[in-house]
Image (tube, rainbow, N blue to C red):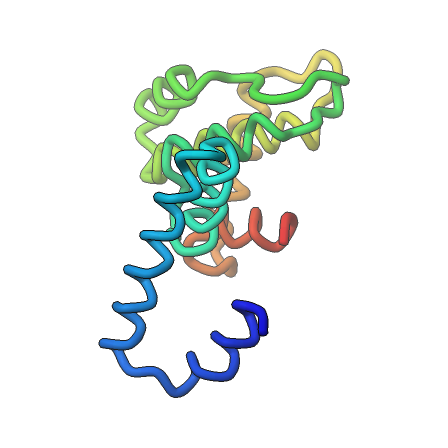
Length: 148
């Protein structure tokens, strides 16, 4: 039997107490595996956080941005988290800073054009995140849709 089959079969009928016990068992297993395969566990925990948390954290944002293949031929971030934080503050935008970091770098990655100003990317990222008919927590939902 696989873990998936057990969860599928028994998890649907489990109560809160059973799910808490399961969480403790999985946590214990993860800690044991971490001793022998720390990189594997780190990636696993980042992917779980990407699944469960409605917003990016600093770690998950850097993980997502690091993997971007940019239209200009580069990979990873074009703007650092510190730079995107300064832009967010200077524009007085009300976005989660980690979501903003991902959005601004994603817009550059996907819509790069030689000669395009930084201000254009900033406006596009703002428009992307403030889309009135988009779901709440759009950046994370968009990322999951593109990477699941």
